Image 1: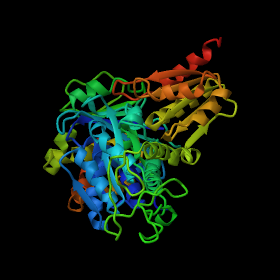
Image 2: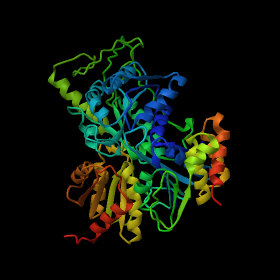
Image 3: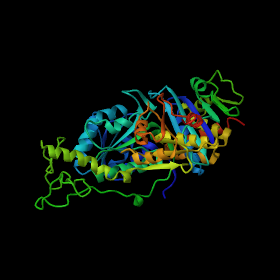
Image 4: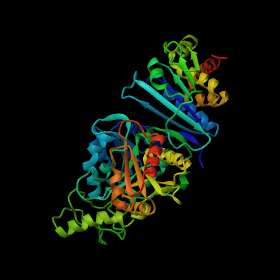
Length: 173
Length: 382
């Protein structure tokens, strides 16, 4: 079982990214549960999305101890990464999380900056992050996440989203 | 079988209602139920149905009652504060015997409470929220596929018994997404709208009970006269002050449901064969309870689980049977302790009933419930 948490602030698209990841897992015939929590605000409040991927039916629907936490803001990194497994991985946007929490395994990538510089909009940050998440975890194949993104995003944006995935995937060796 | 896909509980509820023939939605959006209205708004017009957003939750259920009387299969969806507002007209649906379905996706209350947080605090309100003596059917799904099935069942029960039926979802199941495979349309049984069995000349009266104690009043606009009132009425549908008619009506409203109680009591049992202890849970909490029971079993504790889908009418017989078998029953719920009172009543001292309440915006963890199981198993039974 893989437990993943994606967090940031409302509007950064972490819930959408989590949904796409869960859909990708289903495309690979796995079981998957996705959930989220957020405040009453539409934008700006802390936003947390979780995905559990397993070969068996998943009963408890929330992450108990995450294997991976992806944090796109300092607040999210501070609030939602402390229960990471000892051998888990913390992935952070290195510009937006200047004070990285202490953890043995941290992947730092300027996700938002990459989206803005390479694609012209921070709107693609969540998809860049998905590409990186798949590279780091291998929880689904790159081909499957490509399919899942293409299925979910508006047709006119597929090309840019594919590029965003690739940028995220190639952002680390 | 259709294709596996990722689906949200609220979405499955909306899809299930439409699969059961719902072609009218009236309501007012409120978190965490809004997706149901959203999907209905998107899909119903294309199916020739009607979506209407009213000025508030009261009007939302009023228009649903009217649509049902006009022959539509009708649904409204809401949460906490909206559910409170709808209570008076739920009672109207009970006495005027109007088939409607109310989906209440529970959030933490009272009042505005915690709008985006899960709770199961409306269990007693679902039963007793509207005043006066009345029966109630309330069904609580524990996964996304079952949200679909429960919606189908709720529409069918509303039609079959001509009574309001409540889908008691919670934020956990309503908002989570998981893999589902929905049944094919041809495999879904649909209970059709009841029709008058004879003409006026042959003695048709709208509220004459049939053999199953349910009347067959005509839909508006089908050529029959019908008068609908929230007052106690006789078979003609017109008000009466008769003590006898009043007594017979209240009794019949109850008995049309109680006579089929076993048929409409849906539940699961897990690991009960050799169980010395049991966990009784429902809705989203039951998922965590299952994980906790598995953990406790690994510790060697002989614990089983009963999962109720039918919350009302309460599964007295099931709980009685379980209470005879086990020493203790643990009831975790996301409230201050509600359904546990019914479990205690039905157990009638045959087993010790222990409440495990939680009401802090967070759902249980498997560890919390398994620790409670370990504790109750460790205590010496007096």
